[in-house]
Amino acid sequence: MSTAPKLTIKDLCVSIDGQEILKGVNLEVKGGEVHAIMGPNGTGKSTLASSLMGHPRYEVTKGEVTLDGQDVLEMGVDERARAGLFLAMQYPAEVSGVTNSDFLRSAINAKRGEGNEISLMKFIRELDKKMELLEMDEKFATRYLNEGFSGGEKKRNEILQMMMLQPRIAILDEIDSGLDIDALKVVAKGVNSMLSPDLGVLIITHYQRLLNYIKPDYVHVFMQGRIVKSGGPELAERLEAEGYDWVKEELGIEDETVGQRV
Ligand SMILES: Nc1ncnc2c1ncn2[C@@H]1O[C@H](COP(=O)(O)OP(=O)(O)OP(=O)(O)O)[C@@H](O)[C@H]1O
Ligand SMILES: [Mg+2]
Figure 1 (cartoon, protein in one colour):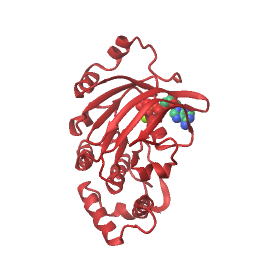
Figure 2: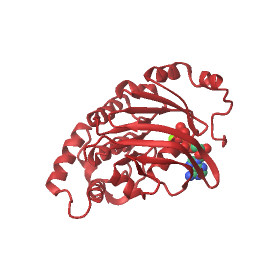
Figure 3: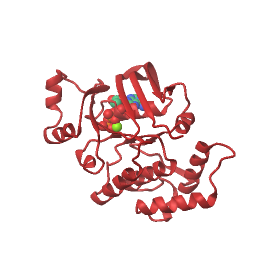
Figure 4: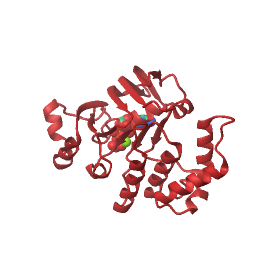
């Protein structure tokens, strides 16, 4: 498939256990674009990521999500992955008993479909190449998925998954949290190596620092379960320097969370 991807989110509203968390998200991410979402804690950023991927706990109450015009909300999680959606999670799960390499090969084959499995040789060649670029020791291929991985190792592993799965739309949720400076550069190198007109990227981050390495075309501010302000890279710089108060003041927002402040 060589047409450039287009993810369209219109007025997306999502509830968890009857409580509305997302309150009308509008966003379009196209191939070749890098979008960054920044926003205070507890405003719904990860909820957006999980909802796009089809997490069963998140109930879509309104709105639509399409990928190349196809209804994403109708698709199961596996279909979404096959359609080219990928999520690097803020808190990757540990899976004991499944090696990283078995997991990756299964995920790739599930995406490619029966009769079109990747050859073992090709898989190993690709894996070696990508692990080398991410400066990962080869022992991570045979360790159980994320089990006992340090915070930074988990994040690097999420990017390895992205590089192996070659998604069309990649959502990266706080891929920089817990990374030391060198690891941050390596992870950014991995993401940058994937950038092309065939990939749209949505980066959720708290820190402008990541955006020095992965240059966003658009920056969005997330508050109260939706995007309240959008701009270019200069918006991220202003947020880093001044925080969120000026945005809240400008928009007359008192409580930026989705109303569950602890
Ligand atoms: N599975 C869940 N059960 C109950 N509440 C949830 C669940 N998932 C999210 N929430 C609530 O929804 C709100 C938004 O959470 P979310 O994780 O989307 O925030 P976030 O913007 O990603 O925050 P952070 O910057 O801290 O990662 C929070 O108040 C959170 O407690
Ligand atoms: Mg989050």
